[in-house]
Image 1 (cartoon, helix red, strand yellow):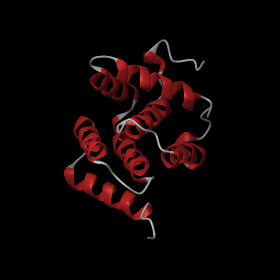
Image 2 (tube, rainbow, N blue to C red):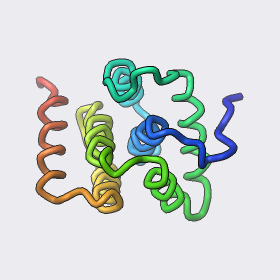
Image 3 (spheres, one colour):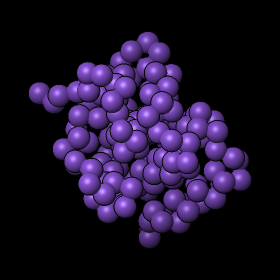
Image 4 (cartoon, rainbow, N blue to C red):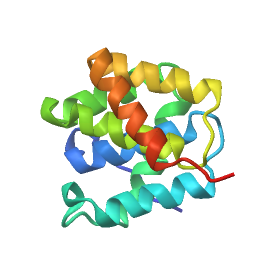
Length: 144
């Protein structure tokens, strides 16, 4: 059994970034292998995760899944993220969410709506959001 965070107030900013990536991946009720690998790759390679204990990914994922089971789970998740994440990392969080959503080469309508909700909750400027989205689309374009 995967442990979960009992005291949610001790989430680090790195945990909050992982939680938003897990949440966007789970927003369509299925976590694809590409999305999961994208989360792992991001945590392993981006400087923001330097020193982060990768074993926490499973703990954070289970915590996110449990929060989603609650009646106001999405609202609770955003409250937790906003509490744990400094405002200077809001655009980073949105960029990571866009990268994970685009990782499997397709965006379902529910994922698009979830990204819009993230952009709204994190108060991402519309122009900045569009640039972040375009960058994610370019990075994850599949050659078909």
